[in-house]
Image 1 (cartoon, rainbow, N blue to C red):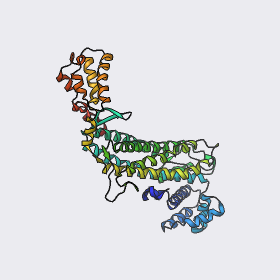
Image 2 (image 1 turned 135 degrees about the vertical axis):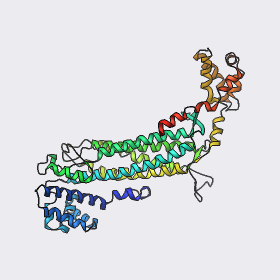
Image 3 (image 1 turned 135 degrees about the horizontal axis):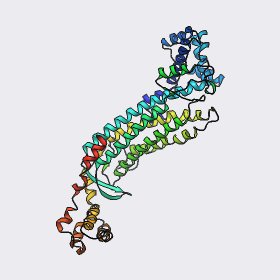
Image 4 (image 1 turned 45 degrees about the vertical axis):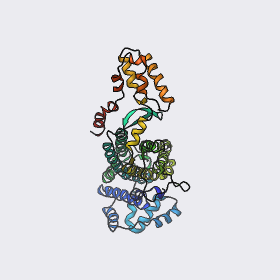
Length: 436
């Protein structure tokens, strides 16, 4: 975790205090289930909950000191609880193994983290929708390969982003369901020393589903899917961030990040207004995606279990969720404050002498009886003159002077093919699909 890129609520999920509180709840709920089944005395479960009711401060330093001797984190925790609860604590952890606690706790933490991420996406979607509606019919150029293609609207650009993040939200919901499973099955997952009803009870109390076959550990294909989803959401963040970075380039400048009073863009060049937030988002997206490959490699554990996954998850669990939480909130702020320049968009649309309307002329010539191949040649030879003049020439005027064109199309028919509004006749349909 890097404090610079951490938000308190998400970071708190991964603090030792939260982890140990979840560990206690797992152990205490399991003890209660065992007591209800007559496997341990009711007094043992009551002793645990009575102690917990006093809201004891989790003494992380004391637990760490015990672990320094035991070299085992779960045993250190159980020892610390026993020192505080007393003799009844000997019934805690009956028939359980460390993975029952660790894996179930991780499921709770990832579920908590995902709830925050879904809330983050909801805020981002609201911000994107607001700006999309604001610029639903703001003309701008659509680019392919970085080159002018045909007109679109800036609202349509944002509608695409909205649809993509809406898909990301659904994937997060599915990932949360995938990861939210409980395993209290004992050594090698056979339930030899603990009843499956204990697992069912703990799962219900923690809001988890039962892991059908845990083999002592929850299968890591679940975690691989989870972190893959985080990586996809991060890639969506980068896609929108890169679009904004391109639009802020000096020669484009159709939109730019908000530049606050007193902000400095460069230590050397006072004129600079750099897209630092979206560049930062590109970097953060890389870090979230960096968790995906290790999560995939964690799937292949030895036999019923090993702990090669453990050290990986102690990194990627906190780092990926904390980073994605920060990135989603940063992107929301960028969109809410994004400076948008419709006049510059129109200027860029017009700068290449009407080349963006070439397809409409091509289609008109084919409909007038000229083969597609010949129509393409006619339009392209005029378009290349405009291209090579860097927009100084007008495609419309060149076409009006081309005998091959005027033999089939009148001046009015040519001019009609340069009507900008023609390209936006289905924007309402697109918006209805995206926003309902």
